[in-house]
Image (tube, rainbow, N blue to C red; front, side, top):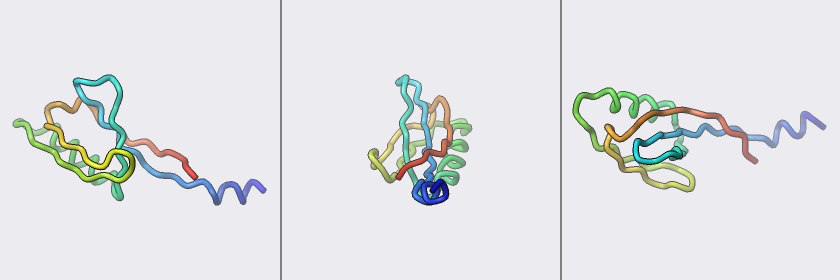
Length: 81
């Protein structure tokens, strides 16, 4: 019975974007979250601000921010059914 339950649980990875103006992170879902994470991390390190415009899956469909407004990034695996 435990094996049957494990087959029903799916895992997705959420990209958490922490912004300077908010206390709560923005959670985004992408088909390839690791690639978007790496892209945003590179944009954060750039000397000049970069406009970031991303199409996402999930409740938030689009994110448009300037790279110097990002305080931090995180990836988190989440279970869902």
